[in-house]
Structures are given as structure tokens and as C-alpha cells.
Length: 299
Image (cartoon, rainbow, N blue to C red; front, side):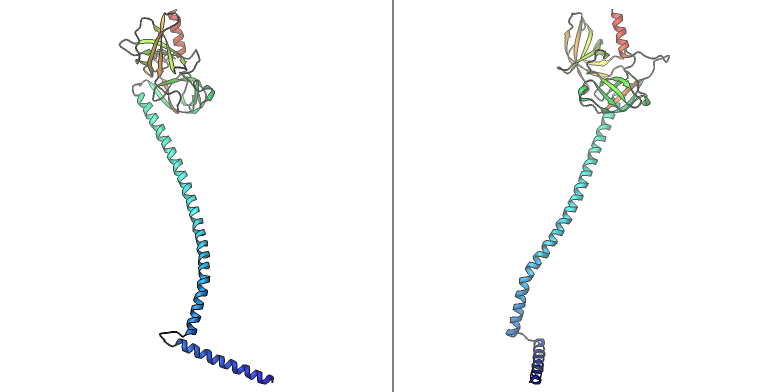
């Protein structure tokens, strides 16, 4: 019995091999049409493949898209960093161009001041509590800066050196409320009219030009310049223009409100003007000393 089953299995195996070889040979033969078993197998295989192909393609496409998004994110991140660098560089370039333009304008104002040496400086400090009083610049005694030197911008005179340290200096602005802050000045006209810049009117935003002779005819719009009588400030530096003229409290002299030519609020670049010694190499008086001498002489 076991021998019979063994022979039977062998016969079935041989028949199956013969049938498989016959199918293979039949399928390899060139034919225009497929048999229905072949069509069934191909259609079934194609259907199964289509079922698995679409999800697999979707999943593969999803991961490809994720990879593309990641690459795009990294590229955008790099581009944003580059744009920030370009924006920073552009800001620096604009700042340098503005500083150079301001220096060129200031130097242009000094073309006629052959007896004076301009020293460019940058504002490095300004206390909000003393905004109209003083500023700090990055030049000091090591750069030849001394007390009472005039400080100007492209607009005109803004103040004088109040204190010179080794590497920095404090500039007292013309808008300072210090009563000792006095500058010799004159009103330019057919006949020059002299006076002293003493004080600042915050409400009107105007400098006070005092000690104008009561008989002098001062007109609105006339230009006010530094007189240089103190021997420290250059003569002819622009201060501003007259906006109003009133009599003083005693009626003996007049006072003019002067609109500053320079912008005291926004100050970035300045020029410190060093005046050379007069003949004989004798030191000159400060503006305060000169104004005090004028006061004593009038008395």
C-alpha cells in the first residue's frame, strides 16, 4: 500500500511537470490571442498590482515630498539669512554714505575758514535727561581738542567744548539753559549789529540774542553769525535767523529770537573747529571771558 501511494505521487508529479512544460512551451509560442487562463492570470495579476501600486506610489511620493519640503525649508532658511546679511550691509552702507555726506557738507561750510582746523567727530553719547544741554563726542585731548572750541554741523554752529578728556569730549549745546553759556554774535546787514547769544527759549525753540542796541533796526529773517570777538570761535559761523525782536525789560536794549540753523535734536556727525593762535602766539580769550570783558567795558 505505501508503495502504491509512493508510485501514485511520483506519477502525479511527473504529469504535473509535463503539463507545466507544455504550458510554458505553449505560452512561448507566438500568438495573436491569449487563452482565457492566461488572460485571467494576467488580469488578476494586473488588478492586484494596481491595488498595491497606488498606495505604494502615494506613500513613496509623500516621503519624496517631505524630503523636498525639508530641502526647500533649509534653502529658504539659508536665503533668509543671506537676505538679513544683505539688509544689514545695506543699512551700514546707507549709514556710511550719510556720514560721508554730512562730513562733506560740513567741510564745504569750512572752505572760507582758512585759519581754522576742522576735526571730524561722531556723537557717542546723549543723556535723555539733558537732551538739550550736551552731547558726548569721540574726540579728546589726544586729538588736539581743547575747552571752548566751536562745534558745528552742516547746518551751522551747535555749541562749544565744555570739557575735554583724553579720548572724549563733552559739548555744551547752544540750547543749554546754563546762564554762563554765551556766544558773541552779530546780525548781518548793511551795518552789522552785535550782541550775545544768552539762553534758549524752549517754548519757541529759539536762541536769545541779547544786548542789541535799542536804536538798531533789526528785521525778521536777517542772518545771525558768530562774531569771533572771543578769539576762540571762527568768525562767520552760521547760527540762525531772526524771527522776532522785542525790547528788554528795561527798554535800554533789544532782544531777538533766533531760529537755529542747525538741528539740535538730531545730531550724529560734527566738526570741532580749532582756531590757530593769533600773531605773537598769545593765547586767545574764551567766549565767556570776551563777553565778560564787553560787559565790564559797557559798565
